[in-house]
Length: 262
Image 1 (cartoon, rainbow, N blue to C red):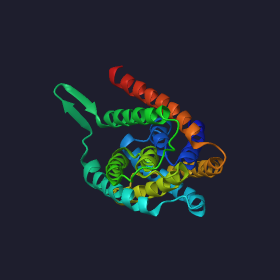
Image 2 (cartoon, helix red, strand yellow):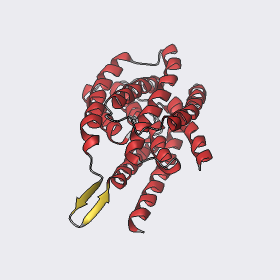
Image 3 (cartoon, one colour):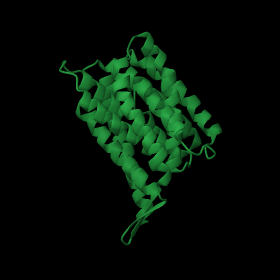
């Protein structure tokens, strides 16, 4: 399982390098099911791994001028504020169990259930539209603001960097090319991850040896992903990745339901 887990860690970087997102979608279930990390703690691990991997993947996009600074600010600021608020104020007060009348659900179950539902929604958004390149229309700052807040909340609660939300949002709201959206997305992910880590109140539970080992393989994947991004159509890969995370979401749902009812 550990060998397979480290192999899958490579896909974290490949996904980020190719599509500017999707790394944390793989990171959280990878940590929970292959490395036996607590789901809530896995969100913090995800911030570290995905944030640092994205940082390493940014230079090629800077060199090719595929980062939009204006969008980094207009999208990134509300996203960062949401990350800090949820990580610092909301996450620490989440109870271990939630009671609904006679039903008692563990926090880990609810987090993974919520995570799998997010995966399903994102998979349909990827599979449903094969082409993100659309004609220029007026810039939508409202859409960017709302999506930035949503992305930040997701990042703070379940450790999702939000690239699968950021890239489509940047393309649809500001009408920039997908390559530039990917580069911009990576920088915003780094900002979110950094703020999320700074907002953490307890670092004593982090296993830095595990973090560094997974990060090493993720960085290898990032190098490969950035190189492939120049040769492979991103929209085709987006559809393939959409089907992949849909299967992943179903597996998580089945696994967690089996734990509850059996």
